[in-house]
Image (tube, rainbow, N blue to C red; front, side, top):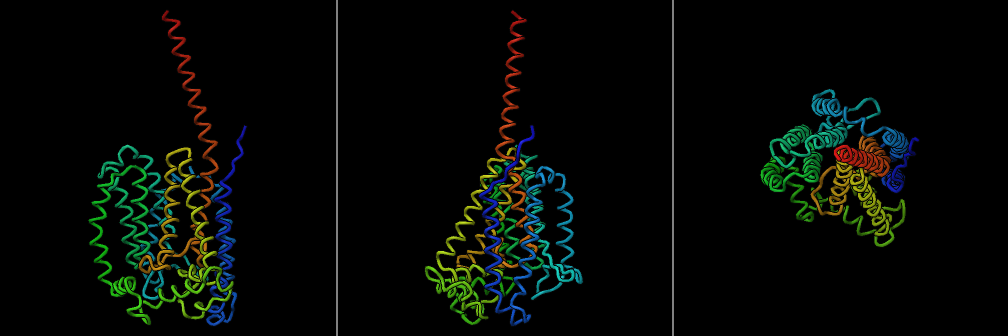
Length: 393
């Protein structure tokens, strides 16, 4: 009889809760700015509602689509991702915004190709590590190929320039390779060789170096490069235990730049206080826990690596965003998953969550079926041995 597939309901509830919180907080953080720039306080809210509804449809599609059918799509998605990462660097396809080329614009719709690249990389890593489980510990056969693919994506992303997402791609690759059995000393050698390169990349761009200086001492230039992080500190510190109240933030009144995107967590801290930020952190901790659980309970290696990779990707973006907002990390432009304003990032994170939910549907039941199949095979072999023994006697 067909088995009823039930997704991980706590994971589903966490994702929907975070998206709903994101819609509310995007409106709260953006209404004043939207009214000033576009003469419509609901400008960003309407866009975020549209992307959230579309994201729920994408989540549902990812949950219904059997994750095992994604494995044949590895090569096409990789090719498309590399092509888009190269094409976005070429005018007039990729449009320049504040000196960067990270977006495609088609009418009112914009898309950031690195979001697709991150998902494609996770898919490639899951398929590769599944095929090479026995050779992951060997550098040339296991670790080197995945580093070449991830390094190529990171290099193209760096040309946009986008150092934050470039490092996120490398961290994702190394973390998943480690879980698959890559040797620690190989990864330590790679990290040691990459460190001077990262330092050189920071030193080559004056704005990156200023960000590092601001990270060490933002009050050294409080009206310049340290302005943003100081305003974030003021927002978080003003919130106290319960916050100043939803919609009553002062830092969003043209003090904190772009409060509805990368620094939306600061507005949450100001308006909802320590209680609100703790609730958000609890939801993300639950999301990461359930994602890791899905990976550990997956019925096959491909599902396990895919679920673990998607969870690491979401966890990395969350930790980096919150680390930047709280001053624990230098300023990087990574959005807070499910909450920050944005279309392409929200759609890809929602689809990733849908894939996690699909894997969770197959986990316990499929493993039970495989276990029963293994038992039948053992019983069959035992019966064959018994019959052979009787014939010999």
